[in-house]
Length: 422
Ligand SMILES: O=C(O)C1=C[C@@H](OP(=O)(O)O)[C@@H](O)[C@H](O)C1
Ligand SMILES: C=C(OP(=O)(O)O)C(=O)O
Image (cartoon, rainbow, N blue to C red):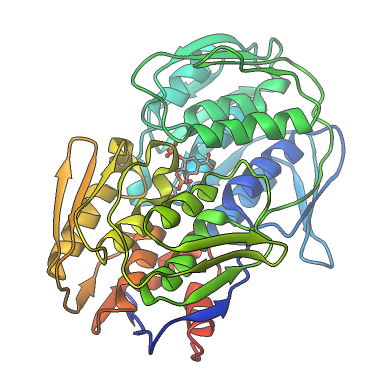
């Protein structure tokens, strides 16, 4: 039975310090690079959640050793990549798009599948690109098989990455091990989530790989040895946003410790978004501190680069003093669920007025009432419901457990923030 979670109503302004677990995007990139590196790596403070455990499981099944260190770190020792293996992608975009290129470097058959909703997510572009680069793959979506020979020629490939930046990141991450490296060219509508590609490029360079990204929409990765990693994973800034939103909507103050001064995480954009909405936002040695305003200002904002923040921003917008416009996010229709439809449906059910545009949402604040908030197996839909429930009595989030995709104990963290027991 789906778990029903009555979202707690804030008893007043929320005041809390909320440590947030490691970044999903950095952890899963670090795991892939470590699996392909020239020696054993240490990943400190990695995210341990469904998406990263699935990534670790996928790499283990291909012959990589991943062990728990005494301090919660992951010790990754590369091995000879080989099938037969079965990879469960769950609903993780990073697993379904980053692991097939690794599997193409293995010897033997590797079968991929995932959750029912994962079968709907865009993927064919990555598989076609790998075929062009020399891989033997049967299928165009989950489930599919990669028949590896232990090596891949690589070379130049042109793809349309307008559905997901992960198509590019996946090809780049394994490319140092392709015989010719790779040159990926994008041809199509603008690539979303570009900061995530910048994160990929930065992590490859930090591992000693030569990456040329001077030309827009073209990335070239030279073949080379990936240096073993010893990295401390930053907190997940996108996962921090529901907690910061709690301060914003209740006029309270929330601090997230360890907010990096410089980062490639797209979630850092929440600082500007909350400032635009009238919150006070300050980064210091203590972390990032957000203090909510008396009233939230509406926004007209392009979220193309930071689409994963949309559910949080839509929840904030539902409490603003006027109509907000969220633009540049047509690609969210291919995320964990169709996030534009999901947000429209669920906010409308609570009495909100939300319209879908071709590339986004118009959110008109209305007095909201309680009701069931469906999560669509989407962790960020579930956390958006929690934000709304802070101010709207009677919001019941269905399947709160789906937050475990990227946050191991969201209900516990939320209760602690509110000074309650879970
Ligand atoms: O590479 C990554 O780690 C991610 C890239 C983005 O995907 P899209 O480009 O598909 O939006 C982002 O939304 C996702 O949460 C994580
Ligand atoms: C789009 C997201 O995830 P994924 O990595 O599965 O694409 C997300 O976390 O918002």
